[in-house]
Image 1 (cartoon, rainbow, N blue to C red):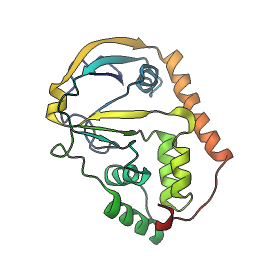
Image 2 (image 1 turned 90 degrees about the horizontal axis):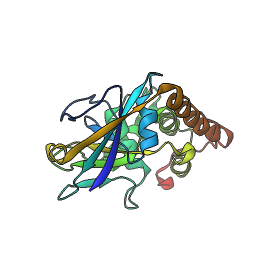
Image 3 (image 1 turned 135 degrees about the vertical axis):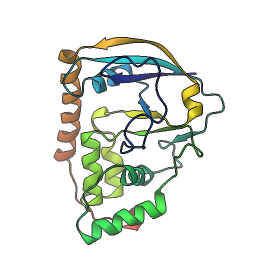
Length: 209
């Protein structure tokens, strides 16, 4: 069994399958963390009071895609973002890079393939790193390094009916914005500052992979 936390604007006693935006990092799903403090920060993203919901997920017979496993690399994560989120791609090289990554690194996370996805979360900072990479601003190696800046955390996403059947609500706690919104903002700014202070330009090449 796995303890999960979900930050929200209101208590969520029963997570709903197929609820939420299809343009989220990994598509439609229920996005959680195994870090209570991070979940409280996520709950206050609009500078309003929020809630952190606690759950228990039975892992029995669930098919897990763990993008943090060493058999995957950062380009598998980028490919999912390119499929689900909006990247403004204007120049020819960026378009070629986008098509190359999707063709070679995209993993189908549909419910028939997996029940749960574990991976990076594309908060504002992480999303900007990915955009810089796509625009040929940083190398694959550098992108992998900067994903650890600021301790922005990972996410655990339920995507199949089976996973929703195996999650149990245990209760919730309040997340006051005056405490957790500044922490969220500071964490994001720290990641940005660390990135900008040590930014290295490097052209994309399949040899970097």
